Length: 592
Image 1 (spheres, rainbow, N blue to C red):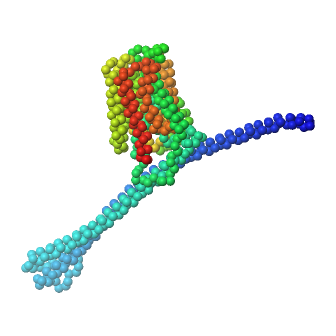
Image 2: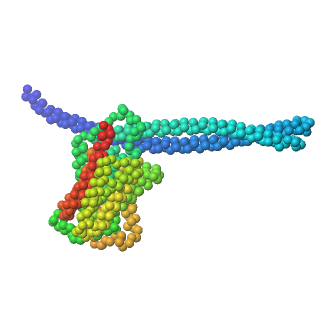
Image 3: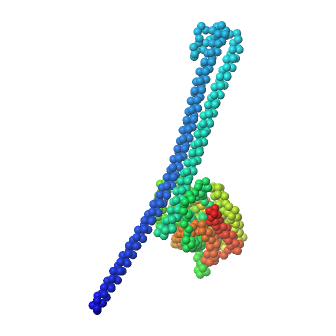
């Protein structure tokens, strides 16, 4: 008995060790299975995105071929119609000449017989006799001309009837062709909408899977990274569903986002707005004022560069150097197919798309330089508030370009923004700026920045759907970097040229690094906020930009604002928020 107990005590460690090995091997197999499933899902998503792009290209090719065939068919029909008319005229001329000749021969024979001077043999057809003039020659000639006129009139009437019948037949055929053309366009549009819906549904289903969290998402929108996102716009005509196209009833509804995801997205959107506000305040600190600025009431910072157009260009270039060094890595992390899309853009040779991309980059470049100039001359909160004129310009531009008439709420919101801008800017003109800036230059620069930013938003809206937002943003940043470099390389006058002391270069480099990092951090937070909460909710949080900028400017550098200016900022924020909320509620009302 004791011996059996000894043996069992020796076997227990071996059994425990074998169980641990089995458990370890099972965990390794589960880990390998997890990695394998994750890789397969990522490959499926990449394949689906590639197939989607190929289908869009094939549809464009089919449309182009259809237009070419239509133009060729119309040209061939018009050529046939002209040839038939020439043939009919030639035949008519021959018939008229033959009938006229026969009639003249007959009349001359009759005249000769009646006058007693007829020929001994009948006149063969095709030859004209020379009879002696009878006594009643004038009367016979009048009868001959009357008969000839009658014959010609009948011939022309018959020709007119033939032409009318051919014209009516041709008109019927053209109407049939137009009917077939409309039917073909409707069928093609139905096919395009069906393919687009299926691809969007597949993407939304895959986006709910945690394994592919780093892929693209359909709600993402190209945005600016140091100002409020352009999420306040109505959809372009290409994005609005056509009422005449029947929607498939069997299509599954889009999967609703979990409440936890929406909450996380709202937190990320708020964090992005905070980072943007810190960006504006850091830019304000970087520009020298009349007096050194007290940071948190603890220490003074004199600033690095003086305010001016050339120095704003230099700050933008220093920031973009950091952005262009890190943005490709961030873009690859957010959207692995970014380089494929960019290569496809270069290989496509689409001049219209390139003009929209480069045009939007140029407007964004101007907007950035002007907002830097505005922040250097007037308080940051006031500058960002005045910058919010861009929703008004954007809505009016969409109304003119796309026929998207704003609603009643949109009109009231535009009136509220206008009133808020007047309230926010009036105290700056009533009293001189404490920092020594030029109030007129600052206000005009902020207004011009908002207007140029609206141009950027409209061009971005025109290019929507043709290029993914992340490759679009990367190309935009690269173009702005080129524009900034060329602007500094071109000789400028003393009023516009950069004015930098050699001793401030270290501070300028550090400031550029800080601004670039804040730019990328805000871009990353905003992308994940849109992914979790949706673009519409993220845009509502983005409307807090002016208020948060003014609050952080007060906390960090003790930049005080007049009560009227604060009231104007609140009116602008509420008006823009109303436009964003309407963008969320309007589709729900239509669906209901």
